Length: 286
Image 1 (tube, helix red, strand yellow):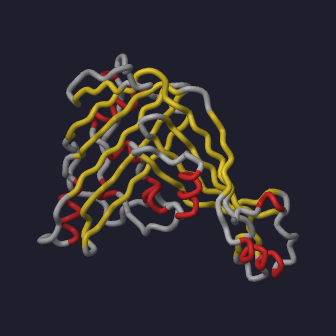
Image 2 (spheres, one colour):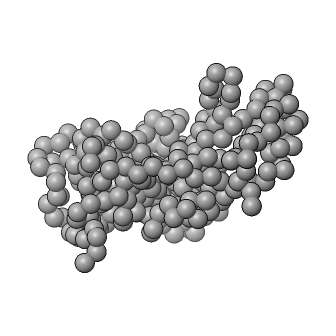
Image 3 (cartoon, helix red, strand yellow):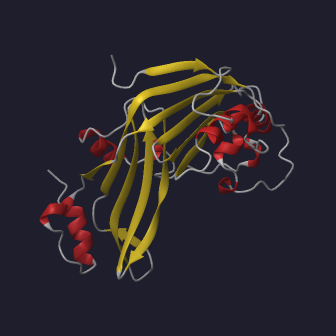
């Protein structure tokens, strides 16, 4: 018997662990026409995490096994005392655990105001295995919003939460299982074919104490004979293929991971900036 048995049900079945889910106020459904999709810089999604970081996670046995949903957040420059550094974050839910990855590396600010990296990424992986049954619901769920954005100047993506883009039955389950999350991550990407919207990939995870719910939702169209506007409108009203997983979490296990880097390159940067040499334990090269 597997350690975490998977109990499946259809989208029409009564959600597990929801209680009075039918009374939850889920609000109005937003449209992807209200989202301004941008570029895809590093760390903007799980698929844009640097290859050396993904390799370090894989070598440490901490990469997701057939990820249910996963995402990442772009690095932000921060300062502690006189030291600049940048911090990125990633997360995933697979069929065994929920994990959060904090990535930090040192920076040096040049006289022209630009930053250069002076250390490899250092990863802190906080992983919480599942215990007991893992319950999954899946199916096609139609949208319940119109095709008109109603605004010639749509808001930035941060103004629309991913949960608000999902159909009402999905939001009702999510809010019924974890109404007030302590952890709330989401991700949304759009793939295009020759400049025309062709696919949406959305995901979220919410955690409160030991209760987790994670949702992945995808939809796609064939936009070959459409204009870009027609493709966007068509995709916005296309049903989502939804998979929702609920699970109970075990205690957190923390692991530190070093990411490979060319020591000579980093030492050259540090010498040019008149910074001390890297200590031996920061040498991530072989």
